[in-house]
Amino acid sequence: MADSAASLAGADGEVTAATRLRVLLPVPLPAALDYRAPGDRETGGAPPAPGCFVRVTLGPRRLIGVVWDDGRNTAGDDTIPDERLRPVGEGLPTPPLPGELRRFIDRVAQYTLAPPGMVLRMAMSVEAALLPRASRRICTATEAGLAALAELPSRGLTAARRRVLETLREGPADSAAEIARRAG
Image 1 (tube, rainbow, N blue to C red):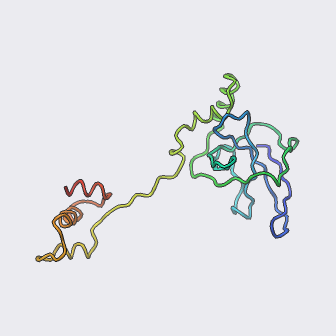
Image 2: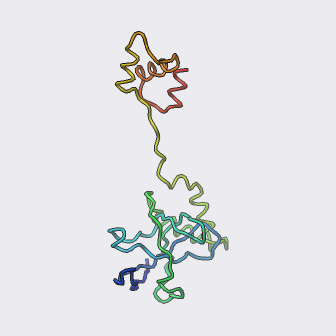
């Protein structure tokens, strides 16, 4: 990847290094856009490598894009000053897009005369697959619940609650919807 380093003054006047990244977004633009990579002080590591999925802003929208290596030398193409570049929001915990697929996307875009972002959109058509899985709430019987179930004259325990506690005692922990289905 050809990236250029420039000096930026931080809020406290300290000079930090910024790296220009090319990010291809799944929108009908003719090329990847330049963004400012987070510095070592912000992330504690290196900037995202080509192929990494990142979340960036484009106008009022937040989009998922791919750090792109399009072979251009951005050092000689600094039409936008580094101070005006928007930073990369966050890296996503997904495997990077392989170099072969990135080159294939570029070739398909050239062959079909389509914007490369639209070809990328087809390659990453399910955005939910790029995001981490949502946490799932699991229900299990607690000691207090099992003690309430063991009481013979069950005070405050309705028939429905008793069925749910019996289901939890007899079977494995599961989601609330599955427990309700099994308890009837």
